[in-house]
Length: 406
Image 1 (cartoon, rainbow, N blue to C red):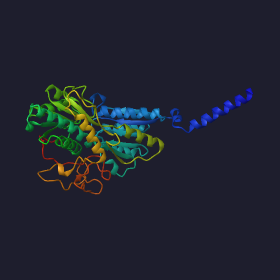
Image 2 (cartoon, helix red, strand yellow):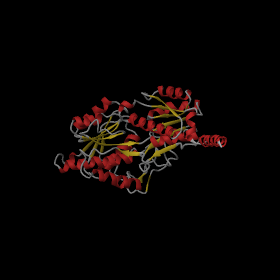
Image 3 (cartoon, rainbow, N blue to C red):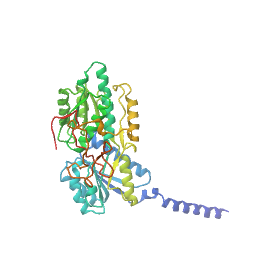
Image 4 (tube, rainbow, N blue to C red):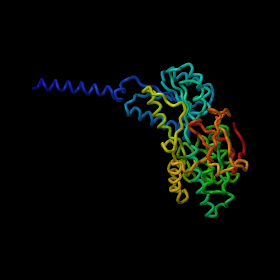
């Protein structure tokens, strides 16, 4: 009897080993899949790179928890220059199976390294050239953040309405100041979506824009916000990487909506909420596919419906009454398609309704097959058949550029 028991135990252990060998958990003892990440700035910006790193860290933690052995190697603090080429090359040489790059200007410096390491996957985030460059190992990804900006605009517009109703400003003083990094499609699309959200609830609102010529310069961003406030802005928003527009708004007693991260902790008396891209699902899926030998799409656009475009928690201490209900309704209508951000009946350009605009990349080259992006009364931004990166470049009536920075 004792001998039979021992035999059964041995058989049980053997069966357990067989089943375990076919599960992802077994890979935890195998060689790690290395993932490289080249980033502009670092997590201390509390904005752009902070948001990217949160998404990447969460994705890697989830992959490891699911039994995939992943090692993350991060190369921080790069300008958009040849050091990015060096960083990509070094990460590939260290054995990374995939290397992500998180800034628009990194793509041109990343691309040549893809030719040197054809077995490595290279991803340029927020960009638009890699999916069409003829290489099998380069990719792009972005998200429909204009949907999130539209909702943030509703939040800002409702606050403007409250200020008007309380007699703190007049309707023609509903001026929004926008701190932009560069005057090209990614920024133009986002600020336009934001303005259209504002106008959907506060039709008297106007917006003035100051470009700073940098993705993440806290001093320049603060100076731009201050200049906009001095020109009458009572609401500040931004497409820039740091929190200084929020803290400047608080300093001068005006309000703010942010980008990439919840800025209410830095500016609790000013910042209403932020919109942001949730990068975790993309990172998780892309890396998992690399490990499993599944081909990833060359271009990917995250959506609000898939929780890849998010709003941070509303600062109810300063938000206008009914704002959360308006947020919930807008998200439902955007995800169902009832609201189209770039509905051409809702805005004009040069006094005219938009009837034609080609889908172009941020360098002015025609995307895909020179496709028309306006049909059925809508400008179709980040359309899947075109590209994930934005290509809306119109200057909507009601928005005034104070300068330009290319």
